[in-house]
Each structure stands twice: as C-alpha cells, then as structure tokens.
Picture 1 (cartoon, one colour):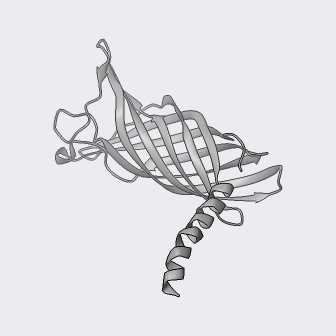
Picture 2: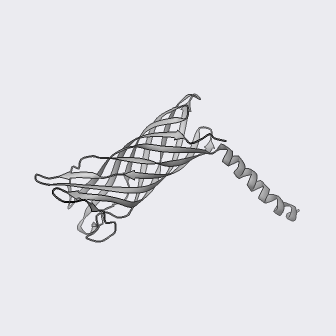
Picture 3: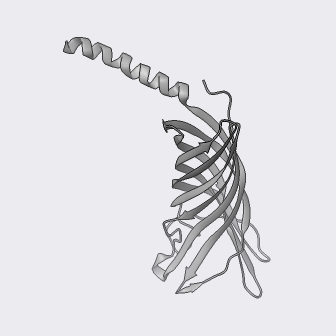
Length: 208
C-alpha cells in the first residue's frame, strides 16, 4: 500500500499544480507615483515637495477563495522627493525593484467590481540620482556610511482600492516605509518613502 501511495503522490501534486496554473492570472502593471521621502533630523521635520515618477511591472493572480486573491508582483518604481531652503533646492530620485505581496478582495458583478487590497512590500534600490541647485546629476550611493544617500533596502506597507471593469483594474494606492531608510541613523535622522500611486492593472493574455 505504501509503495502504491509513493508512486501516486507525484501525480497528485501534478494534478494540483495543473489546476492552480489553469486558474492563475498574469497581469501587467503601469502607473504614476506621487512620492515624497519624509525627513526628520534632530527632532526637526522638513516639508518636502512631491516627486513624480512611474511604476511598471507584472503580477500573478492566485485565487485563495471566492473573490479573494494573493497577488505577488515585481515592479520597477521611481520614488523621491524635493527639498527646498531659501537659496537651494535638493532633489533625490531613487529607483527600486519592489516586490509587493498583496491580498485583494473583489465584490460586485462580472463586468464591474470594486477591489480593495493590502499587504507588505520589499524593495531594493537599484539606481537613481541626486541633484543640487547649480550642480550636476550624481548617482545615488546606497549603503550604511556617512557619505551614502540611502539604505539600499526598504520594507513597507501598501494598501488601496479601485474599480475592476471587465478585468481591467484602475486603482489608487498608498505605500509607506516601515523602516528608516536613512544611512545616518547615528545622527538621529529618519527618512521614509511615502507614495500615492495611480495604476492600471490589465490582463496579460487569456487565463487558461
């Protein structure tokens, strides 16, 4: 009996993953970010201005229950901020590869649904630049040292909602760092990404 079960087990796994693949959806993502990086240093909070960037990538749609989905994604996301004083302006524009792990719930009709979603994200800085008034663009230095601009890794939370029209989701979302991305923690500085996004998520091909 055990021998028969041993040979049957691979077929059971194959049937399970074949069924999952048939239900799984692939989706493309493109949108705009309206971002700031909050800055608090020595107890004083600055008032940065928004920086506009793009986000794009793709996601999987894995059904968990009726109208409930798990949606891991891979996204390139441009964030940043602009800081101004009386005589100077300083901008920082990091680019991240971001992996959101989202739970979404939809309700409504087949042609029109309301979708809400939330979940953590994990991000890695892969590029970007800084610019000071009268200066030149400089590549962002990621690291933990005094001469670095930002820590490379960011962990945060994302939530939002939108309207799903025949499989096309138009949504607004808000994401915020849960960790301090300033490399200068020793001098009591805290920086956090904060992003409002407008995104179109569309089916990529047909679900099998």
